[in-house]
Length: 430
Image 1 (spheres, one colour):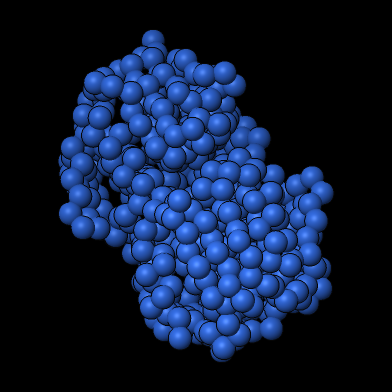
Image 2: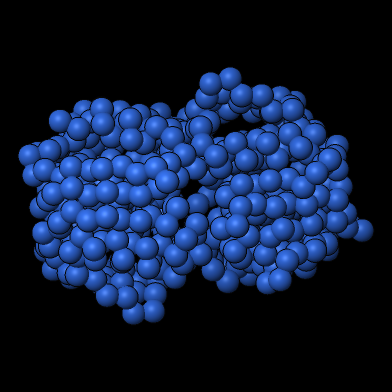
C-alpha cells in the first residue's frame, strides 16, 4: 500500500497561481449526452482519472466512438440509433456517476446491458435511480437491495412520469432527464428536491434539447440533441483542497484560474467566507453556458459557523474539508444533514472523525449532525483514508496543518479523481 509522509511545519505556506483539472460532473454529462446527439461533439478540458475513464470505456462498449487526445475527447453521437449490446458486462469501476447516468441513458434506447463495478460501488444504493425509472417502464435486474451489478433489459416502451424527488440528487435527476429524452410521447416532469447540481439542465438546451426549468419543476420531452463543442471549466471540488490549504496555512495565498463558478457548486467557498475566510472571485466570460472565474484565497482567522441541511447538497463533497477547517475556527462549528456522506466511496463521516480525532481534533457525531470544537492544535499521526480519494487528499492537508510528521496510507487512491494532486500541491508549497 502506497503511503505519503507529510511534515507539518508552522512556517510552511501555499503560494502561487494554478489551474485544476476539468470538472468531473460536467465531463460525465457531456460524454453521455454527446453519445445521444447527432454528429461529433468535442469536449476540451476533460480530466484524467479513473472515473472519467470508466464513462469513456462504458460508452465505447455501447458502440459509441470516443477518442481522447490529452485533455480533449471527441464523441461520435448515435443520434436516434440505439446503443449496441455490449460483448461483456460494462465496468463502471468505482464511479457511481457513470452507473447512475447510464442506467437512465440506456433504459430507453439500449439492448440488454449489465453494469458492474468495484466492491465499494456495489455497496452503494442504486434503488434511488432504479425505482423511478421502473415507474417509466424501464426493466432492471439487480443484486439484493437494488445494488450493482445491474442488468438493463429492453423495455416495451417508456412512458412519461411526474416524479417527486425525495432528496436532492443531481445523479437521480439526470438519470430521469436522460430517460425522458427517449420517451416517445408526453412530458417527463421532475419535482421536489431540485436543489442540486444543474449541469444537465444547462447542457441539454445548449444541445437543442427540449428542457424547461421553473422554480418547482423540470419538464423534458423527446428531443434530437445536436453535437456541441464544449470547454470544460476547472473542477471546484478539486479547487476546494487548495483553497482549504491556503485558508489554514499562515501567510498563504493561492489563485485558482478558470474554475466553474456555477452557483450550485459554490457552497464550500460560501461557507469558507462565512467562517471569515478571505475569498475573492473574479468571473470570466460565461462560456458554454457554465460560468467560470478565478478564485483567490488567503489565510485568515476563522470563526465557527452552523451549516443547515438545505445547504449540504451544494457542498457535500467538500464537507470533510469544512470539518478540517473547523478545527482551526474559534468556537463550535455545527454541520447538519450530512447522512449522504455515509454513502460515498466510504463512510466519510466516520472516516473523517476517526482521522481528525487521531490528530487531536475534538468532534462529536449525533445522527446526521457533526460538531467540531476549535481552535485545536493538531499533532501528527498515522491516518487511513479507507481507500477514499477525497479523504486521502483532505488528510494530506491536515498533516500540513499539524505539528510533527503525519503519514497518510493508501495515497494512490487519489487517481480516482485527481492523479496530479500531490504534484500540484508540492508546486505551491513554499
